Structure formats: structure tokens, C-alpha cells
Amino acid sequence: MSKKVAVISAVGITAVAIFLIIAANLGWIGSGNAETTTTAAVPQTITEITTSSTTTTTTTTKSTISTTKSDKPTKVMDPFDGTGRIVYLTFDDGPGKYTDQLLTILKKYNVKATFFVTNQFPAYQNCIAREAAEGHTVAIHTYSHNYKTVYSSTEGYWKDVNKMNDIIQKQTGKKSNLIRFPGGASNTVSRRYSDGIMTKLSKQVEEKGYYYTDWSVDSRDAENKSTESIVKNVVYGMKHNEVSVVLQHDIKKNTIDAMEQIIKWGLKNGYTFKAMTPGVDMVHQKINN
Ligand code: ZN
Image (cartoon, rainbow, N blue to C red; front, side, top):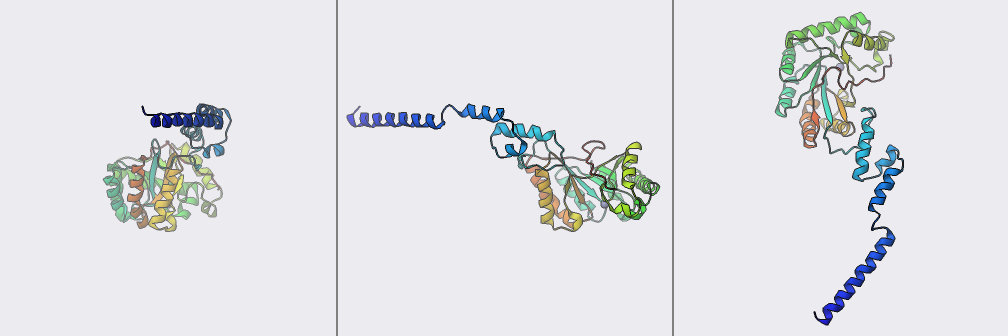
């Protein structure tokens, strides 16, 4: 070893030693585990946890969130990790002229959905048979979807529901025991026709052996939003819920046009699209009448 190399080595060793001393004083060395221990030992609220980015804390946060209500959006989930997260795409008010096109899209991606059907467009009744045959859940939304008819009396409601269920049986071979109220259980329009009817109906549904579900994610397609806006609303909802029950309408063209983008995004990020099972993951909004 030449003298020059030896001098450089000595300088190098000294530099490393100085660095180690500074690092130890600054807490860069030997405090890695201590930091994790401190984090775990200090009681934290969910809000506090959102500011942390360590893997350990994220895991803790997820288990905390899962014990809370799924319809409460939180900002702590990894939006791009859909692993173990479920999306129920639901379509109300059909079948109609776009239903066949929607079924073809769902088939292309092998995605199952749920249809809350009506008889508003009788020419498309046979789509109900296709929905069932392709593995989707067929559920009841009412025959007429006329608020006056279905919300003037409980008798009127059940008469209308039974009429729809007869069509469902004719098309699929069996009746459905899953319901979604027109306007949702929380609607206040029904008060115009009968005071307290939603309170009565939501009880009767269960007494008669049916289940009802509202939604936790609103695509807002009923407000005739653009395709881009529908995609944005649904994806936002999926990112913020462990279980998403998505409200859409298969009688809206913009909704059909939004489906491929929503499905592709969901599948790419590990989300699972499922058809609803009566009694499982039912969403109940607050009843206001
Ligand atoms: Zn509806």
C-alpha cells in the first residue's frame, strides 16, 4: 500500500467515525425501533393516525375502521388497494332500452350486479330473465314506481310489490325477497301521500320475511350527471368504503357509458364486484317519515 492510499484510508475512517458520532447524537442510529414503540404506546385517535405513513400504523388503522359503520367515508384507506373490498353495483328503475347493452358489458368482465326492477317499460321485461340467467341478483323496486300508488297506503305498496314479484317469478322461476324502496327508505316525498309510511313499511318488510337495502355510494346519475361525473362519484365512493353499495339506474345512457371505466378501475385495483345476497351487507339509511 502506497503512502497516498494509506492517508486517504485514514481520512475515510475518520470521516466515517465522525459521521457515526453525529448520527448517534441526532438519533439516526439505534432509535428506529424506539420510534415504532413510542408510536404504538401513545394512544391515538383516528385523525392522528391519518397523518402517519408507517406500514404498522396503517394496519392498525384498517382494523379500527372495520369496526365502524361502512357507510361513513374515511380518508385512511389506501385508495388503490381494493384487496378484500366489495363493490355491489346496483341498478334501479329498469329494465329499459339500455339494459341489454349493460348486461353485455357486465358479461365481458364477468362482473355480477343487482337489479331492482320495475314494470315502467314492459317491452323490456325479458331482460329480467337474462339478468337472472347471467348470475345477477333480481330484486324488487315496485311495479309502477309511482310514488302516489306505492306510498298512499301500506296496502297499496304491497299490492304493487306483489305485482312486480309475479313478473319476476314469471321471468326467473322464483320470487325475490330483496327490496329497495323508490326514493330509498329515507325519502320524504312519501309524507305527501301518507304520514309515517316509511316507518311502517320498513317494519313490515322484515315481518314479512323480506330484506331492504338503500345504498352507501350515490353515482348521482338520477341528476343526469355526465359520464365523467358518474365515474368520478363511483370511484370516490369505492375508495372510501370497505363495502360499497352503489346506486345507479340502468335507464340512463350516461350510466351505461360509465360502466367500463368503473369496472376496469376496480378490477385493476383489486376490488371485487358482487351480486347482493338478501340479508348480507344491507344498507339502511335513516328513516325520515
Ligand atoms: Zn327508483
